[in-house]
Image 1 (spheres, helix red, strand yellow):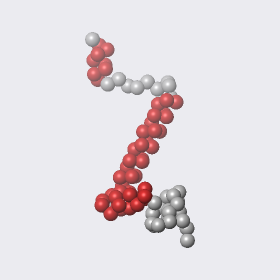
Image 2 (cartoon, rainbow, N blue to C red; image 1 turned 90 degrees about the vertical axis):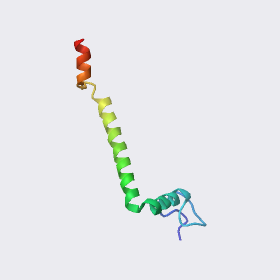
Image 3 (cartoon, helix red, strand yellow; image 1 turned 30 degrees about the horizontal axis):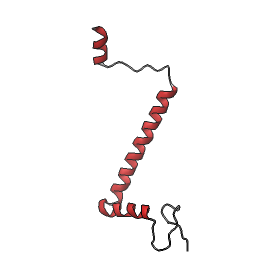
Image 4 (cartoon, rainbow, N blue to C red; image 1 turned 45 degrees about the horizontal axis):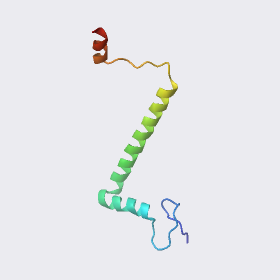
Length: 78
């Protein structure tokens, strides 16, 4: 028998089946459904990863010039 949490495998547990953080995840799944929790996690994590990649790309490519919006073009004309 293992004394680590079966979900995160980081926390030591003796009395319960899950550590407190993983038990919170289990509770959220009981409220919203497993599929909904997984969908939210996927969307959130993918969006964050996309933003990080976009920031890295903008930081590394200094030769890229962002196109001007209409309002910026109008301000330049005045």
